[in-house]
Structures are given as C-alpha cells and as structure tokens.
Length: 350
Image (cartoon, rainbow, N blue to C red; front, side, top):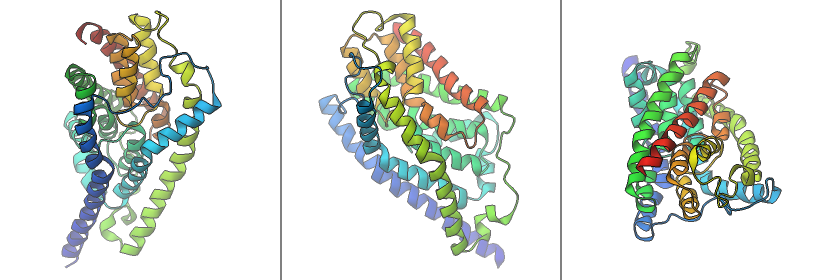
C-alpha cells in the first residue's frame, strides 16, 4: 500500500511540476514568441537594440545610461526571471533526486546531449536560466548536464534562431546552430573533465525525497528553496546589470572610426565584450543588426552572435553558489574562445 501511495505522490508531484513549467513557458515564452516571429517575418525586425546608441560615440561611464539600461532590461526579462526562480526552486522539491540522477546525473556524453535537448524548448536567456541550473545542480544533476542545459537555453533557443533568420538572414541561423552545438557540448565536456565535484553532495535523508513528504512540509521546503534562490540571485543581479549599463559606452565604443569594425582585434574585442555583457532573449539580433548597418564586418558580428547571448558576468555570478571559480572561468573563457574561432570562420562564411 505504501508503494502505491508513493507512486501516486510521484505522479502528482511530477504532474504539478510539468503543469507549472508548461503554463509558465506558454505565457512567458511560447505564445509571445509565436507572434513575434510572425511580425519579424514581415518587418525583418524585432525592435530596437537594448543598448542606446550602440556602436556610436558615448560616455565611457554614465549613471543615466546605467539606470535607463537597467530599467529597460528588467522590463524585458522580469517575467522570465520570476519563472526561472519558480522552476529552479520547484525542481529541488518536486522531482525526486533519483530520477534526476538517472537521466542527468551521469558524466557521459549522452547526459550532456539530453540536457541540451531539454534546454532548447525552455528558451530562457542566460540569466533567467541560471536559477534553474542552480536548482538542477542542487538536485544532483551532473556538472556536464547542468552546463549543457544552461548554455543550450540561450544559444539554441528555437525562437531566437527563427528571429535571426528573418532579421539577419538564414545563414546566420545555421552558423549559430552549428557553433552553438559545438559550444554547448564542448564546454560541458571540458568543465566535467576538470571538475572535482561532478555532483552536489546532498545528504541522503528523506527531506530530499519529495515522495516521503506531506503537502505542508513540501510547501515549507519550496518556500525555503525559493527564498534561497532569491537572496542569492536578485541583489547581485540588479547591481551588476546596472554597472554594465553604466559602462556600455566603454564596452561598445564607436566603430565608425575604421579601427574597430573589422580584423582580428575587433573579433577578439567583441568576443570578450559579448561574453561579459548581459542582454535579454534575442537581444543580440537588433544589436548586431545596428552594428552591421554602421559598418561592422561579418567576423566581429559572428563573434557577438555566439558570445553575447551565451553567458554574461551576471549569469556567471548567479552560478557561483554551485560552481567553483575555476569552473566558471572555463565556461566564460570557453565561450570567449569559441566566439573568437566563430569570428574567424564568420569572416569567410557570412
């Protein structure tokens, strides 16, 4: 009888998790992006770049620019942030750790591939998927699975790939898809190889098995998990976004002087800047569109295409509770290096 009851609880918990996830994604991502894709197909645009006067002369530091950018950024992502926090906390209390360990707990290549596939339909930007990645890590998903899921969200977002085809051209879409898969699986594999702790060591007590808990205790556990994610995430999130916005004139200098719009130096510069800077989902598309109109060549544009959405100093800081500085350095550095390689190839292909 107990086994039947446990199985019933398992079905109920997983069903509740999937309901929240699917309804949330439909409201925040799938439905709005469907209409955005229709608009992009006819207008060949998805709106203005989130960085004001990108590619043009601007002060190196501006408090006003930081405030404007922070407001614009959170107006764009707040719904996804809320969803990410909810999903990241629920995965810790509704999905049995044994289930996660079975499919996402191994260090084999197939675990990374599965995590990559699971990350594609959630379509979150790098910062909004960070709380979910933290939740998965705490639920005993392996390092390579978490990294693959984390990077697949922004790099292999199907909606972004469609927007990109309508706005920048389909060759950009296929280029991003190929290098995106290389980045996701390659960096996940490297991080797993050098990581000392391939899993989070969670005490083997019944509190980590939702099947053993009552609904009241489950609610308390969820609120604790959610509160912990909020405390770890939001303060640093807001502060770093504001700092990046304030220095956008330094990070994205004027390119119309003929020195920063082409060549290997420009590729390196935009690969590093793209890795550091933070944008909402698909925010790289209007930025690249504007920069190309100002004279940016295909090489630096290809570097931004990979690095700008993949990670940021903000999302890497949000992963700090469950990753070491060495692992975060490999993720960020790996994206920058692959961005440079993509930039070199893009100079000849795009």
